[in-house]
Length: 161
Image (cartoon, rainbow, N blue to C red; front, side):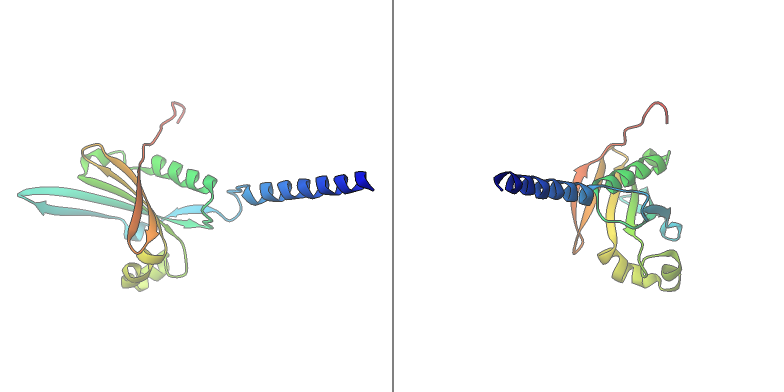
């Protein structure tokens, strides 16, 4: 009976570890994808102190985002691969990442552009990547109420890419 008790404890412990492992597995193929949100891309000319500054922004939508580590790595990788090759020519260059939802998508935004600023920026903004002419590069994670958590961000380019 004593051996059976220890065997039962070991079995439950094994099931617990297996369950935790399965919950933490990241499967990028399961409904996760990223697409361009071109309708929101822009280049603005700003007049500041008798100089013209050019600001550029590119937008992307993430489908099936669950906030897993592998998804965040995939987003960082997409950002690095799609960063404008002439980003250093702009005063500031942004890549914005939004969750694709019924109110944050190309069709809805085309029909109701004001809702992007009223709804999407508050509810579906995930990340903002920012590069400046001075060489600063930052990744900002949206935390709600227009608050961001910032960290330095550098794209690492592999020789084979």
